[in-house]
Image 1: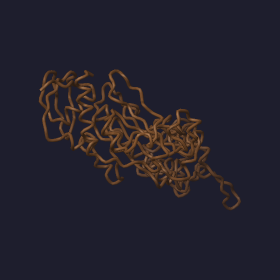
Image 2: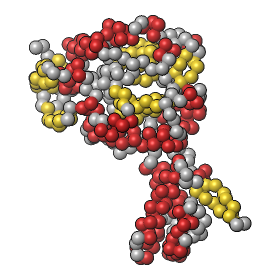
Image 3: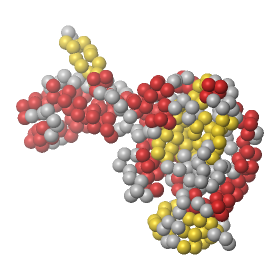
Image 4: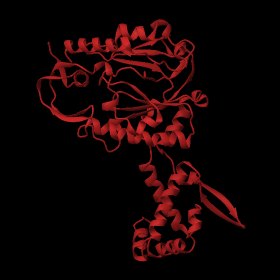
Length: 385
């Protein structure tokens, strides 16, 4: 990025912050604050600052117009101290981070920025199911990061005291790391006999049970030949075992619906094992593990600007998420309504503000919000007007 471009972006970020009013996180004066300035060739964060040192946050942002702004998930007794021991850690929010270019099946070299953001929002919905249904967290905030994904802040009092190891267990659960179906089975006594039942009232047991029931219903709707072929497609199920399972499905489907893994002999357990592995692979949320386990993590300030895109770090109400499109709704109004001249240095298809178009190299006149987006992403430079 050329100096002229950097100076222009810093100036316009400062203009944005002159009118913006930032909402600070709870206990803001007990958190560490950090920022990355618009320095040539540097991505070093200025950190170990408290609000007491910064002064009024709005005034600080207007004066310094940083490229990126962060605050700590943790609360400290002395957030401005220069070492973690001196800061005296007290508690920390639980943070989840979804990054579009780290998603399974997404290749940043071949997937467009817009498509990566769409895929990331789908993964966000999966993560929120874990947060709401499996953990029943109440105090949550969802934020578009302004860059490649989403953050979820959990501030329930019972999670703030968790150490890194405990947070690692949450990560392992969401990512299904070292999870196996045996941990989801309970033993029940029924008329003098012992039955092994898949726990299916919630969590991973419910996800596996749903797949098992859907399979059973598909088999019931198929003719016997098709059903037997489908059953034999599972490893470990041959002709005889497939016939036994199909007979159980036809004669006593209620036992399978109840989660009885011993109905139909060992075959139902084999099916459940296979479906569990499928669920573990398909229904995890690909969160950035170090972010969640780090009790001292600094995270982007909602309402600030992202220096790598010029987009707003946007807090979202839950009902807004389905219709939220970052490349339309995270554009700062401050950058709308006037045109600027830029030099396109990286041509290609671009999706922005509800339109998709092919930009070519050379000097162009574009709306400022698009110009800032392209310059911040390293695809254009500012030219003298």
